[in-house]
Image (cartoon, rainbow over all chains, first blue to last red; front, side, top):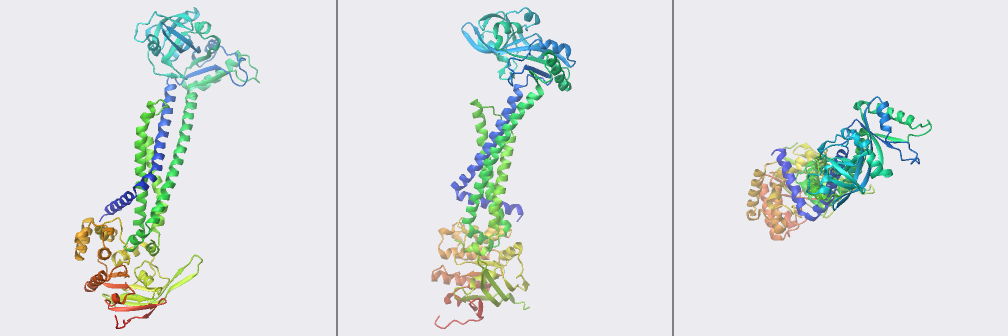
Length: 404
Length: 236
């Protein structure tokens, strides 16, 4: 008989003895089921977080740098950061090709009986180009609108649906933004992008001056969005901006920067880092669960070996080798953990879409989760099954036969 | 060495050690020769070392001191599991007092098990097992589990299991001990057949009625052989 055939027979015997103790088999499997489901969940959450990060920063190109007033470390209000810094940076920095001031806030927007609180951005003409936003209907906000303090707005694609419902011809319509009458002059193409916490499509764009004076006023968050001429020069440009702004704000050497500079690359990096940290944490939890389930399996296998001591003695007396006995018990634990792993994977894969639909957190199924989950379950079976199986194979045949 | 000698023990000692390392001697220098095809009964009081001796012959125990020749080969010092398992599998067939069948397996699978360990193909080993079971009148009980069989039937299954790899030696430890006298006598008839088949039989028993089926009775006391050809008193 070939070696494979014999192994097959031994596997069959392992199956039979597992089936003989159904509830015990199931209970010891439960640990692995939970462990592997956790692994799947971990990877789904990790992948989900990664996807969210990627979506959030999709709108930022790698060569854009964001500058904000520094509001930390007790110097709130003392920052000399202003939107006019944008012009200075554009003029003085060698590696900055575009710079535009933005103010951002929230305002109540009303049209007929519809009203909603939406994100408002006060922008200059250059903003749309820097953020690669394209017009769908009408026109964009231009620099004349800004200098003329015009009461015009451009809507994100989602805003149209929110305010006008079925209506599609919205150009020229009057809406109220923070109780001020504004004319809709354009609608942007849908982007599906996220900028920070708000959706690009759910935002209203107004001329910077109008937004500052009439809509959001002092509550606004101000920032300057700049574009570096070349991705390789991001670091250089950051240094340039720092020295320009320090000079502009007349900061002494002893004083700290009253502004913050963030480039897209390091922002994405930071967000990814925190997503990874979460993944590591959850992986640790999954690993502990699997460890505990492994100890459970080991315990059950020890009980099984103890119960079947006589059987082991018989096996030895009729010519079973240590290797045969080791194999049989090892197969039992591996089958146990492997089936547990497969059930865990099935549960995980069923749960991911359900939890996703509940919108509790971003989940995305990945192939890594099931693969790692399954491999782990097999490894757990081998490692924790080995010691009991080894002990079984080393039993003295006469002692084993004598046991009841 | 005499070619007819199947089993030869020279000054075999065997001791057990307690947890506190105290030595308990069980066999104190056994000299024994058993010829090929001979049917030997081992008798003696409880604790005289009969079963220990049988286990040593069956390679289930290593011996502490002395020499063990199996068909002329010195195997007393062999400790390699692979070799010992091979000897137990191919050269010997064990029959126990408590039958020692696998309760989960059918009669057929129980009989076929040593052949599985020997690496015999499923078809061949189950055919052999079926033939053996039929020869002891168990043809109708192939798919029965041990719990569904009487003691006598279980012992017949165990006999078939001992024979499946066609061993030269049959080792039996009180084979009739758990049987009623009728089943016991039926079993002894099967044992007589072993002699016809040219097999060597070593049987531990304390029942004279059973022992009288043997060619020779070896009597033991306190771990030594006191009589190599013990004669039963006439009232048996």
